[in-house]
Length: 141
Image (tube, rainbow, N blue to C red; front, top):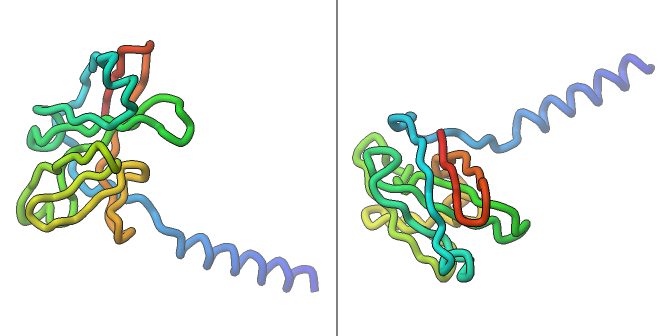
């Protein structure tokens, strides 16, 4: 009886775990992203996301997003649309007011709080962002 119960719970756990959504890295690694960003006081006060041009995949830019829920630190995403990456690459247009970024070609809208498109199926490429002090962020892949 105990063996049977263990088997049922183990099987159920395996099924539930295998159905969980996994964040997949949609873009190949860009040349090493190792960028130090000076955060202006106006950006700290506004609490809005920012686009850093000339870095990331095919130099489409990086999106620096403050952690608005925890209020602790920043996260960084590549500013490249990941919907049709095999066909073409498109740099996203940032909307600071509503924490979104939109592709001009396919019109996919990404929520920068989660890094996922509003349909819930595609992720932006995420980079690591470390805040060394109030004004300096180090972004690496």
